[in-house]
Amino acid sequence: GAGVSQSPSNKVTEKGKDVELRCDPISGHTALYWYRQSLGQGLEFLIYFQGNSAPDKSGLPSDRFSAERTGGSVSTLTIQRTQQEDSAVYLCASSLFAGRNSPLHFGNGTRLTVT
Amino acid sequence: GQNIDQPTEMTATEGAIVQINCTYQTSGFNGLFWYQQHAGEAPTFLSYNVLDGLEEKGRFSSFLSRSKGYSYLLLKELQMKDSASYLCAVRATNAGNNRKLIWGLGTSLAVNP
Image (cartoon, rainbow over all chains, first blue to last red; front, side):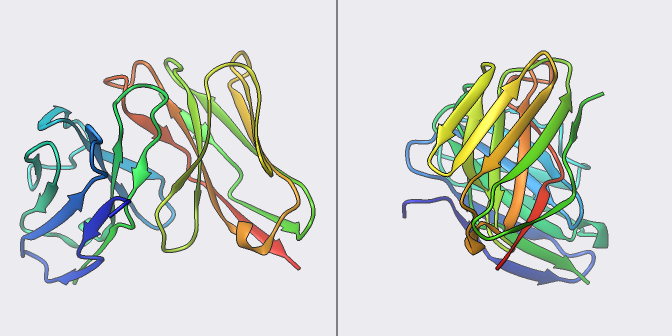
């Protein structure tokens, strides 16, 4: 597809379960970002990939969160032992490169609800 | 600390002009972005400013003053479809790396007929 694709679009899970969120960036985009957006909150940076490497993991809220990227393309964000405070929209974005004037292209997000 | 301020909500009339302001206090500056986000959808890129002045792109223009830590997004000939949240984001040079954006909370614009 032409844009950033995320799956699933919606996920409802029980507290304590693990979830895996997937992001398929725009072909050829080297940089990939994960953000979290909660109601009334700004976009919260989670992690950034350049190729398959994650130079900046500073935004991951806890060690329950992890992410990987393979083949310089698809990325997965895994949340282990989900908690109710993890409920949010998880947005993935990619950019052609990580340079200062390269805009982010966002996917439609995964709405995660932890019950 | 790093901070971005935008008005929470604005209302305007179809056909009118509206200006959405953004002020920032960051440890460095390496560009400012404006994004549009319709409810339930992904943010989409509108504009990028790194030098002082006005950038015009159709009905939308964006202005930057680095000395004042200030930007605005100007929307002309408003249409109902412009009802959305408008996000201001700054790339701060000292934000851990040069690639992490600092985001405002967004301005929710309602365009009325």
